[in-house]
Image 1 (cartoon, rainbow, N blue to C red):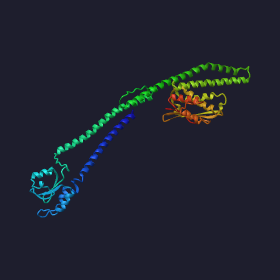
Image 2: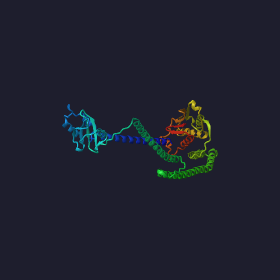
Image 3: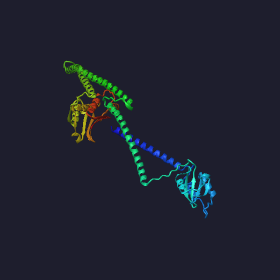
Length: 450
């Protein structure tokens, strides 16, 4: 859910950023276009050929006659003006260049006021004061848009405020739309993520098949149906296998008990030769092994499918470790002196109480220690270390003998299905896992409880 909210906010931020970037790009384009228009060489209004600069280049004598007329004619032509003339204070033309006959006349004050603000017979004009009078530059028709705008200061301030308000309102409006539409997509995506989460948790899923995500919803629904069917088939198969193993174990128990009984009778019968008695002992020992293997197989199957009830109680873990070590040593018929079990536990570990099935935990520890004894017939040192670190309980088993082969350690750690001859370690891992612990196998075995 948190990741989905992050995606939603990233979507909103990204969309707002794109919208702002788009607006900035548009403003840059408009500004650039304005600059190009302002610098258009076709109708120069500023810089070298502005009316002010041209007017300042007129030279007059004491009678206010122009002395550089030819030079100014060239300047005006370079400025691409249609015509030019100078009016004296009485409105008379005292100098002109390319002025048509219909414009070559006296101008009144009202005429000057009119064309200085707007147009002169359709020609856009610019005016500037000179020593000899008022210089008038006329440009080709339809080459310049000219309009004299007058606005009081209060109205201008109000206009700027409205522009700012309009820009801010536009941003807010766009942001609200983005959030609203984004939230709509968020809800649709949330339905999909909830469906996927339910799917991963093996819960029934049915999503409405409509809208833009109907194809995805349809695929999820079909996948959910297939997974439910497969889960049902697997559960029935696993239940059947567990029941079959349990039934076989039960059926074997009676004939196996008879074999064990007859083996015991043969091994203790003094009326038969020693060779036959030894064979009876072998029959008994092997029958005990078969019985234990069947019990291990039955227990492993139940633990795998959570069919083994855990009779939990609060127990001291260090006591279970020591009890397992003692019982393993006591179970050795001959050569117990070849094995020495070293137990090193911290004071915190000795006081640690765990809620667990004592018999299963004892079974797990016995399997580990017994594994070291069985695979080191010449004897070895067995080490058990218990301590608490970072609020985690560690129990480490190792020995000075052969240790656990690398391939078996990898198989146990990777939960490889094709495991052979390591039923004891499989049971240990399933017992530890069923108690919320973690088991790692290297040359030794490390068990961690949170």
